[in-house]
Length: 448
Image 1 (cartoon, helix red, strand yellow):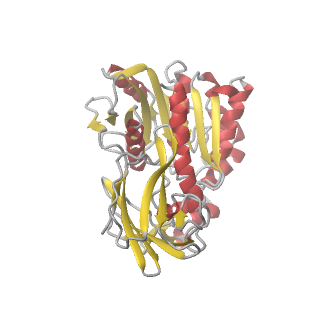
Image 2 (image 1 turned 120 degrees about the horizontal axis):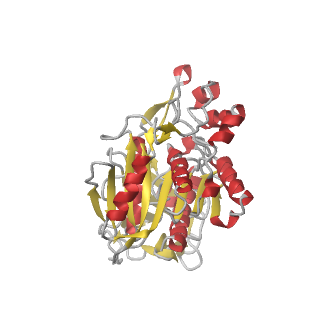
Image 3 (image 1 turned 45 degrees about the horizontal axis):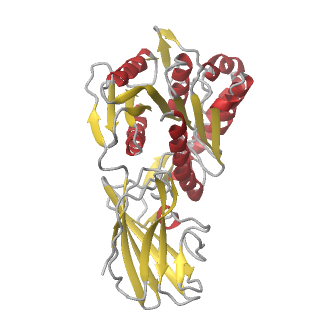
């Protein structure tokens, strides 16, 4: 008989939300338990434990999921039962399989698509086909587990959901801003995080992160400002007054704590978040900048300043011309690195004056980022704060084997598509999981 366990997740961080009730496995002597593990505040990991084997005997664990496209993703890992006849995935390394380190989430993030789908990548003669991402189904994302040892077999199912089902999502009804507000199922007034989302992909990512924040007890506004209906098509000449209007909207909500507001951005949006905090030093209690930008650059493929204030252009550093390094790989990292070197004076003028803010700042970088030199620009931000005597206001967390794709739960499959933006599948999964814990711990200190 199959076993079912329902567990809800705060994307990037696993949170056990439902009680576990187990029925006898198909083979009575072999069972699969799925247990919460390593609790940190409201954040918990999940551990798979296989019981009932003979000491020294092999057992193969297969994990399987179906994505939104209808494709099946699987991972198979083989372990050896310990002297107690148990395999604890949180403590043991598979001697054969899809990952090779102690990692309780390894059987999940290491799943690969059985039938590969490819997407175009690169330019001109360098164009090639690379794997696409895992696209989770809406609502609960189910993963089936099957353990086989000799003739014995046991099954279980775990359901991962993006956010707490009690979170209320509502479209902002205001003529001045475009966004989605997420309300937590906790007593008000709520501290609030404004999550910036430029371009359509950025807005979807902002909605994703805002829902996770609401699951953790924060009001969260996912704010669109370019690339979606009702906003400018391109990231060029965006008026900063738009974000003032968004701040006013947040403050006007009856269930929010207007004294405790934070702002969050990832990649290009991170530079905007830091700039807004610098220009409004008494407004934001905290800033979260993922894959941080220390300099105002145009959006890729655009020219001119991306931002204005009172119709005047905000100083920006130009981007270098595309070259073979970019054409061969499709990685913008090379363009940003060349720009930092070639346009030194413009970079200095366009540096974001982070030292003007009174906000606490959390920077999260992947040292293998192939989109932007986020670790380098993170160090630039820290140096500016330290030089101003404000080093205690900033924290820079660097994940050495992660790239640009830091938004995730560390459970959904991270390969083979995600590492094309830098890092390894395991390094990215680790950064996604523990990076979100850093975010929640930071907000607990500076926004509650």
